[in-house]
Length: 610
Image (cartoon, rainbow, N blue to C red; front, top):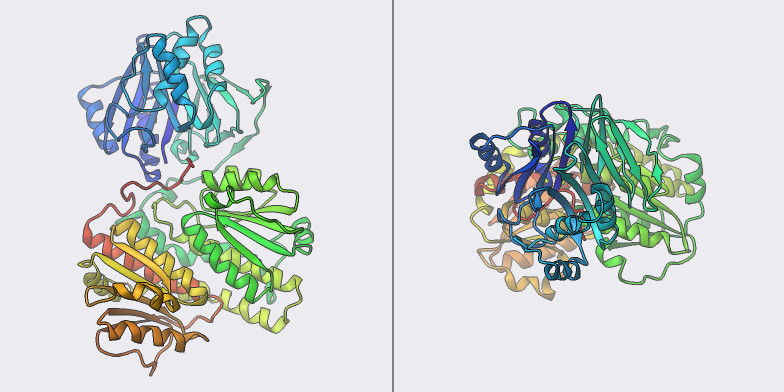
């Protein structure tokens, strides 16, 4: 969501901050701004809209300085206007940028109003900057910041600068990610490592409750008890090429086409001799998995759909009872947790606020055997706070709409299913067949990508519609949900995913000659049932787009039906393969509608507020 970049150095830092903000655009935002210490005063430049608006302002109103803070804002309190954009200042000598939500801002704001403070914005953030100024009347800059920050309720990451001590930046995190970048005679703050890869590869990951003070030559970290602590300095190697579009029109298209390699990397060294290798799960975790009686999975958005697919696999193949819940609902439900239950969280970024809150709730429940995460970002909060973490190897995913992250999540969940099948002594021949399917997966995904021309033709028919209905059965029902989500989030066409068997219980009322119906129709045990549902749509004049993985006389090639044939992949890996053309479909429809494919309106890549 919002992005923070701050720097203090013995050189001009304006370009450092602006370039860092550019790398954070993918997180989603609606305004941008910077505050630079210049000649013992704070110069603020900010604009609503895209970062280019801020860059144009800096060209007409240039500023230089050795210390400053920058921000891309995704609106939570107050509309996306210039006055609500960050940074916010108090008396032009303190400036703050902030990610998150200050839950108790209103009583603090009312107190400050009684003290004569005037508010220029509708944001909760402005409360913090005035609160620091209020305390600074009797305290120095550091003490005022510490006192104000300790009074905040909610989740936040902040960076603060002050004209009285222009080379010092104070930052803090609670429930929202923040890192410190270390350089030679310069130090940095950012909400994401990617913002600083051109400046340093040395990072401290701040823990919840930490407050850090940086100058060009110093870095002091205080924990939540106000004790000076040392956080491990980690070297992170991340190439600029991995963050580029590499010749593709959009990050999303690049990431769709990276999926064969991403899956191959995720499976590499994790399969051996017809089974899951010892490189996948360490000895201690395997011992714990042998005690598991049930699994609870929590996730959000696309990762939730990965969890739904895993439920089918874990129950039908490994015979492990499994529940899947949306993380934001789970933590407020007071769930019943049977003894020896595994808690599993799935997140691409490892910073999703609701998923982290669910994890922390689960850690307080005595009946969970252990906590396990599936994540794409090493050293993320989810990785650090879970007992164990299985990494996907998708590489950086920049497009807001998740593609290769989902595919690699499903790949890891398939491996986990095989491990539980082994633990539960499921027939070895069955397991070996499933391993064979996984080994062929990168090649079959590559074949699915060759359908791009056909998908483009179908997109031309769907782009003129206002709604779409996606149908699936069994393990492919979550793929219908995912197809609908992708279409709605990047093309802005209203779309719903349904179990095909539920058509007669409501959705069939929507079907007419203006309703495109996209059906995921694999050659499995539910094929005949799904064909009868397709006939129900055909009888009402609905235009059908049917994805199949079999050739020949399947009885579906009739009037008003568009068939898209995929390579047969086997029932186990079939949902992974069927997801690929639905990604391409959403992409090409969005392209025809001329929407912002990589940064769809109102959405963010990493949802770091609840």
